[in-house]
Image (tube, rainbow, N blue to C red):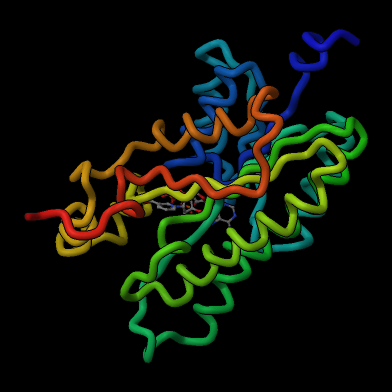
Length: 257
Ligand code: NDP
């Protein structure tokens, strides 16, 4: 098989790919020539995203997968193995966010957040990497958050889960490097998606934008561009890193003279 043929057949799985950042990543990877599996807990919405990609000349299929359910993850990867025999690119994007004051955070919310945002990255990463080993090639991008790099009020569970995703990214990167698999994380700043539409009050929006040199929320496409870069074949010497895509939020200190 030529390098060009092998690239034409590459399969990418995007978790939480039906909406928001995940949908933009799915669309972008399809534009890059990958066959994209749009995996989401919401199959109806995943079907819409996959159909949109196919209608615009890309190649995609929808899968129903709840990343908080280890059995569902195992079944999905068994199906992928049967149908495609490969998973070349994994984007661990699915995540949930709910805010609670530290003293009011219920144990079940903490556990649900860690299961969905963190344990899913471990399990999908293990399943995907086993398929990547066959070709000694792979790209894994874990979507974390600026909330994993800086603390935010109400984000005890969410911020901790995302900080751990960044730690897990490094662990995965060093053990998978010898197999031609790179593992990196993209840490979005605030992005306009259904999640932030539901979660961010006017005060939260102002608190974010006041601390950002660019003074605006980002778009899902701006996150997808960074993910696309890290998933490219020639991003072959970058591994174990976290890339904030955040309008300068992490860089910023005092912004007014
Ligand atoms: P959205 O909630 O807008 O979209 C997430 C998608 O994932 C939805 O389709 C959702 O389905 C799906 N999903 C939720 N739970 C599961 C699950 N258990 N299994 C499979 N799919 C699931 O989120 P965003 O696009 O805003 O966020 C995507 C990622 O980016 C998340 O990891 C988030 O933490 C991260 N992020 C987002 C930021 C932002 O400002 N938007 C900032 C920093 C990080 P349904 O809607 O039906 O639940």
